[in-house]
Length: 297
Image (cartoon, rainbow, N blue to C red; front, side, top):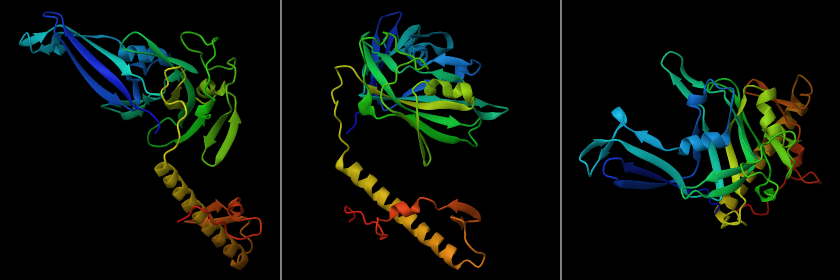
């Protein structure tokens, strides 16, 4: 299957005796905390990653308990990626808690590059290409709307002209692949430059998760295939969706023919709200018969 798993190594070295302890753990998403950036208009993604991986001095009330020294000592803690995943998910932690106001959303804009260089523990880097972003629209966690801007991960390419630090997504960036906005049932073609300009035009629309695919020669799984199990689950869900739309279409047709108040105008009232039925006819074949999926069991 797709390889979203990476490995982080935490390493602590005592300043007194030099003893080093390390611990490894797998990760499926890379968290970026924006709590400290709450009062900043915008930050760069690579700067936030470097800050997350920066060495930390453990001293004072946060001193390290060294097993060799048998007491608390000053130490340096370092964190690094020791195994880079083929597909990197960057998760923006936009939750901020305040005792008076409760949980709020950090609105800081994160400017993310099309080409991301992820630093490794051994001082090497892995190059990734952006292929999707999940956007949340709204100023509160109590309400809002999610949508996706993305392209097919197979369209990821990096040329020799891409900058060493990463190529920012801007109106001047050359388009690579076909980008779309997936907003409920609406799919719209967009330009690559719209990605980082979304927050500029819609201040409450900020990225919550970014999806990058590894594009260097060390990608060990360049041609991934969806597993049979996932394919069956997706197919079953598609069949259930088509069945439901056919049922609603039939209800709308009966309501149009038999309602004492005349035509429903292409709408059906469900739960006190009008639901548009336009498009349900696509669930039928050209001769008007109901569509039956050949893979349905």
